[in-house]
Length: 104
Image (tube, rainbow, N blue to C red; front, side, top):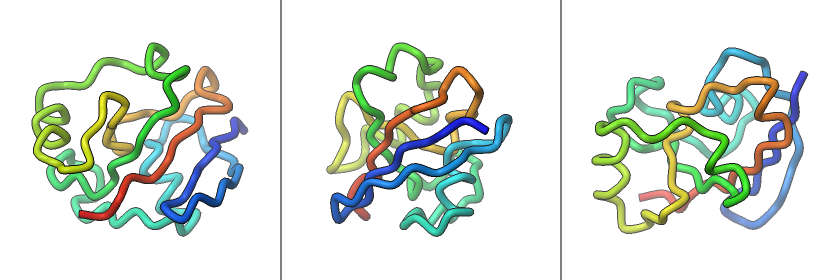
């Protein structure tokens, strides 16, 4: 399995194995990280907001309009903001680094 490197809101970094074909949000949720994921991955709540390490941004598909609109409404929005429910985890993302964004 590929690895996902996660930094919590408290600044602690962990490495977890990620199953291919599921979303980064599901990996975070299943490993008890502080991601509410209220909508279950439907891109309608922004409670799975993460910051993607800059070196990985070009390796991800572009944000769809729904995701962009949700993120831009957040006070904690940054250029590297993504909804983790919209990132499918693949072998190409082995070593992907994300930081869980502040809870809003």
